[in-house]
Image (cartoon, rainbow, N blue to C red):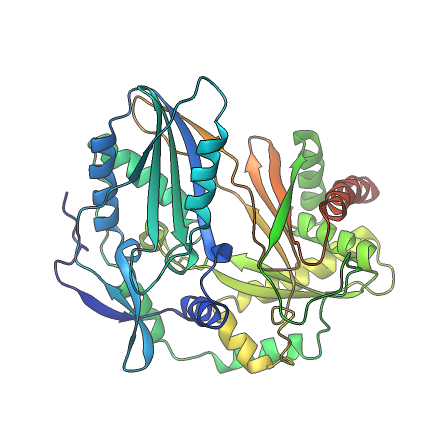
Length: 427
């Protein structure tokens, strides 16, 4: 299974700024699962494990980041893209008559949480648990240094195509080519200056915590599920149309409202991931393209929801205009006070995904997504939502060093209540 962009020799290439930031963080804190991306499916039907391995091999051949190491070369971290080689899923035998036994759940949890050694092995691994002749569990884990959320639907679609004996359209370039091309662009000094002006003096997020904030931020986390029913989503869409905004802007404004209600803070900075992909060529790749922008919103003066939405809309468009500036460059330009107990510039994150990131359709096999419990958290609090038919599903992820599950559950409930009040107020 050959592809135009697959090289047959090893290659050394630079890391993109976002990957550099992840690498330096892990060098400081040590390897952990905080940067793991995973999905798990229960597969029912006549799965062929050997064919799956061949499909995985083709997948790793196609996408350079899945077969890259991170090495220090001339005292600089670089990606070493290895030549294509066979790839095999780890295999485990178990028995089940229905529900997953505790033994299998332990295997999956260990597989998800086991740290990657980025200089020694692939940043991608797969576990296949055989429960019966036509009953398996497939768990895939990637390190964030090689992939982002938009990589998952690409990975699932390509894996399904290879398993079914089909060839995805060839990639015209490798991921390392894209990174090198981007790094040749001159920095946008004016955009950096605008970011410095926007974020100068921004206060850290101050929420009432259940425990004192540790001197050095930990990575333990938990998550609380959240669902927005289709009727409420439709009201939010109507609100967005009425005020010349997007559904994302409405949902973000409500997130800010809920944060203000939780901590009383009126100057709030929220991290928002942008896809960072430029056109169809990059949309077909597995890789780390995501760039995070900081949306700092003024909630002073007890604004009505339409007024707050206007402020959010203005801030969002400014952030989108300058969204190509790597976040690490923004941090360097703003130079906030160093505080090892907090992430720089923002401690809250808001994400809305308009794609099914873990949809897997292997020919002849029914795939049922299984939940991926969040045992880590990179930030104080994060709200992630994704389209699910006409509704939204997601979770509140929280730092377990700071908050109890009941506190996060109360925030999730408050978010839903705030959303309903906001859309009704703006009618």
